[in-house]
Image 1 (tube, rainbow, N blue to C red):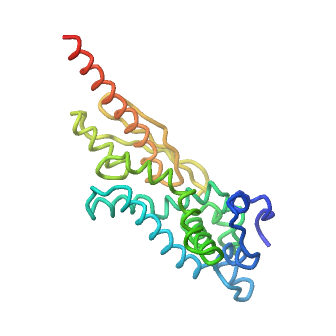
Image 2: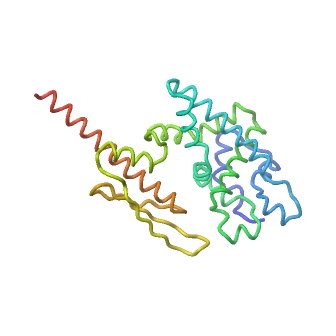
Length: 248
């Protein structure tokens, strides 16, 4: 069977630390991608668990946003949720748990970089959430989701109105009279494992590089660097203005 020994999996360690150990058969199904199941003659796959986990994740995130931000409209809450519950965010969390090293893949997916493919990682992350729900119930699944996604839920609330870094950067640049951000992306590596590095210029300032597995992700990461710096500059300017006002 492909993959590293399960005992080395950070996800397994986290489950133990949280008291959320899973039945071995359930964990095995959680990590079985359909490509591997097909090659093995039709093993149970993680697709049904993925379906379940998607609903559990959506419920927990929606509940948290609804109670945490009582003044936001339905549309604003929906944007926040979409910034958390999406394939890229799920894949990033999955990478932090090293799920790619553990998922059982068919030879085709294995040979084309499936262990770091965002769609596979996101699906496996949802399957793991579904498995925790099946094994321990909604309260423990809620605790598991909060442990993994609270930092992201807090972070997206600090973004601009667009709730993605490129839109937020464009917004703050426009409000500051700095014009439209300009991006430059360089790609490297073989076709099956390309990497991308992006820089972004705002007025006479340049930020980056932002790395990513595709052009969009690299640009978003470069925009995040630029947004953070411009936001800090805005804060410093406001403090300077306040200080001048009190000394006048």
